[in-house]
Length: 485
Image (cartoon, rainbow, N blue to C red):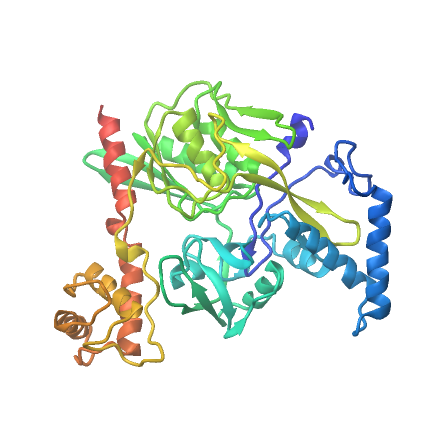
């Protein structure tokens, strides 16, 4: 595998609501019809010929004797899916012709859906990251949430793509997801209104504080034109005389490997590795920055647990290659690289072919990238969405996970409930009454559907206020300090 071929390998992203698997490959990089490489070892027990004979015999028996009629195509596709399951790799998947066609059609400037990257983990459809400001994020979905039901129906046994086909849909329609969340004892439902998800991957802003002008670049994913957009916006910020730069990759699920490489070349000092790619034989290729000189201003990255794949490459390059600080949380931990391989009939494999290593050569798969300055958001940033369950209104002397969530939300909004352990005491009742009066609701002291919905709405707005964003505010304070040194 030469360097040119490596350059075309990309970190894959599968988007709920659309088949936004970002890929790029040279047609010559993989021969889909060729025999297996000579380096592949066959079983010592059976030769290749014997293995194929065994497979054909099993398929023939099933076709001729199974109680229900089944086609050869169904059996072959099932066998392919079974092979991929054997890999125990949530990022290696098979797409039949229909699925592959649908995902290709969605590679435009926008798509309709809920906006989240997912994988299959331990047999369950799992959120890797909701896109920033997507319906999924606004509804309260978080990384590592597991989807158990869609609109009340269990999805046990469905493939990743079969589940996604049930979740995706037209803008304005509602899909109800039953969620299992680590650390939360009860399952809960999250209704998500599908929307139009724009693929605008880079946003910029200028923050002026204490006489210092700080540029902010938010990267929501690494798509085909992200590096070019990043370059344009960086040059615009520099023309405005910024004295420091914040690069925010929170909630960014990844994308093209070459996009993050090109961005790294704009900000990482020359002669430093941006990323290293390792094949199955342990051979490594280092992708170096060729920046003429280090930027004349400090740079700080911002991460969270939903920063995955290409986001982690950039975060590690900033800290290890550039010597810059990274503020926030430990990242998701996706350290493999996938390529989409056409099988000739319209179907495709998305297969993990390489590992990527950080600038310093570290393998972060399953571990994530640690920030240099760890900052977590307040507890209410992480609570499950508030809803009313079968027990009806939440009221005094009740105890439940929902009440615990409500208490944390009320506390975050400035209405002190007295405790956050899930027991609805008199002080919690007074906090509810205060909230209801402040929002012109009937001051019953009970949390009904109307009160729950308004608490949830107010909390979302509170979380989106940059003044309440502890990670961002910490990064701003730190970069101003560094700019003045």
